[in-house]
Length: 461
Image (tube, rainbow, N blue to C red; front, side, top):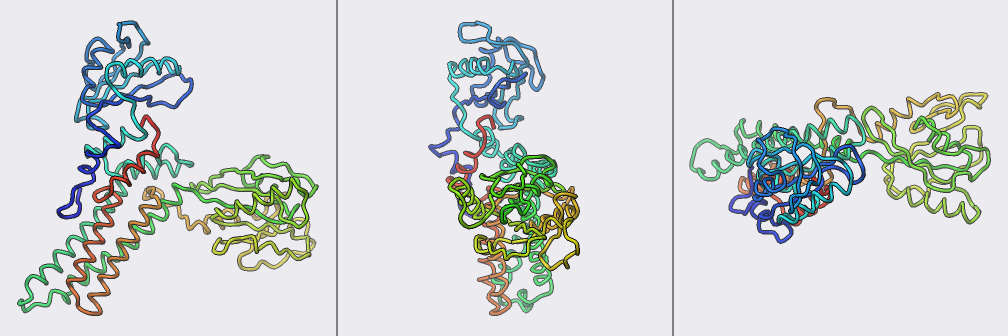
């Protein structure tokens, strides 16, 4: 990993953190809480071998599934199952790791964990196994975050993208861009160090070509990262409109199931209904809301209040209008500024004469399904989503912020060169740009950031 010159690496900072003590041997269940066919207990640390001998009677063959009895401190049998031993450094964490695959009852898992605790282990904190893998250079920070993204993926496309991030696709692209910046810095600093040379290094063709290549690389990586964030986080679409405009019918049509009660009685929907759908790999959360109108009863008024609250977190709004209703509809004031709004004219099957389509409008029949595919593609366009197939990877808000910061430093340096021939300023901005990229992979990061990231993980990871 590359980092800031003369600075302690994040791993050096982390190893001295009071939050994590990597000298301890840790234990946790690596399977979800509850009853299942198989439950896995994971142990990692310097005392793993000693604990394995106590729990199993002897150390299993490395990387070989062995059928063993799991025993407590007094030799009593707790369970039987498969034991897997991974000696350091050839393990996920880089430390010696023991996995005990037994029966999936909560009590059985608890007894095995208690036996490890009695031998001197401590309970792992959230994400601590992944944090140790990061600490021992088994994966970088973007790869570690991809583990959580893979677990929480909402679509198969998002899962595949997270797996590519975990395999290093995103990190490789970031490192490649950092290498381009390093070559640029070398070029610029050579020109600064040897001003007496007759060749003007700051205006030669090679430098300009490298600047253009970096500019194009930033644009491409930012575009891919924005796609990756949409894949990871999904896209929330809030459905609003007057009562009986067909909001709940549209939710049912898009989700393919009768999630919402549909009647001709105004005010049927009293609360927020949420459904997740998959549009070509994009996870879209649909939020059906109470009809917005004046003078509702008390219960309906609460539903309207919640509808307005849901609008505050919307990525986009579908404003449903009854195509047969000619009365004015003035609910746009409830939609926050900056949130994309699409007018959906519903019930076109009841119109005697087809209305002309205007820009920003979708004509649809929630009853017959006419216009449904056009609406789905419109939602995809609102999200700025393109199915990149094998080229996609997941990204997070902090990754995009770091990329934008790095790109801003690059542009500032480029302007300093073009406008004032200021090579020193360009070199400094390139250094800052490279440092911002380092925040993505963890080459440059704060101990506090690492703590926040890994605390979002589940215990067994």
